[in-house]
Length: 457
Image (cartoon, rainbow, N blue to C red):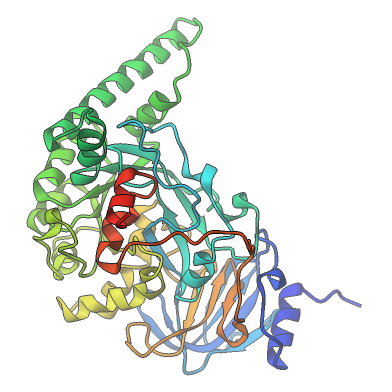
């Protein structure tokens, strides 16, 4: 008698009309599933769209793509005829699954790490899965010129182990911020530099100069076989940025500041850089392309504070047409569920092709995070992070039926229960949130006095 795989049992239950699924029904984060998706329209993103095509998943990886595939013994089959299969959506800028966002006590806090504040019980994870999202870049806030290290996670809903969410092998990344947020938090809020935009630049130049000297002192000690200088966690991280071991993602809006940071990075030999939000990036698209910088933008958010008044819904298209690796992000727990709609807006504003639009929420953000060899497209050998849509993923009428992470169905609309929370605290106080008009302005400032100000408290 052969043992029946757990994933097969789950699909067997589904086939006979199983009851609503709860998070406790889901397998552990370490599970790697197998399944054959049969007969769907497969949007590979990188190799075109394939009609009436099967996708065979074995042990969490895409093993074969083609027509007439047979399921190996023990591998469940799901008929997706008439439906559309896409890569799992990747959000390059999120703040869900965190219990803290800002360490706003110093202009430079490179020593803190968001992985220490991961909250796997955040129901926002499940809601994101309901929108086909499988990977997010959950970030430090924008209170500091140099914030803490971010974390790239897979949405393995069902675990209470924070480490179970970690995207294994993803490059380290860190949050920088330009403009009003750091100048208000530190200049106006605490009376320390930076109080101005030029002060932000000097924070960077002094920090990198100090980090370069710190690393040179370490190298000299190693060469001389002498004891290393005392370890400084902040300078270690800054020095790792200089060596390319930590990728920078920078909150930004204005074109002049985008140019400024690229100049700083050139002076210090830093090559990888992605600008987040970048509302005025369309003004300097050729310069971004020449540097090799990425841009992760909103589709059409604008005018929620003074420095974003000069925005354009054509921003993403202008960047794509100039050869800038561009993504569209959410920076919002609600919008996170509708990134495929945000991508579709670029077909109204700029007439991008289907593949170009889908790339904005799949392969391009994966490239910006350094994980495009694993996710972001449907290719043999890649992780089986997939979404099954009822209709064309760029249609306003579509919805997500199934979302697979590592080949495991972490969201199944057919078994979507009323309460998907992993942890319920009856004594928990509900914190008032700012109005929609203030939502973005405040979301990156959680944990600072200015968040309470934006929230009207």
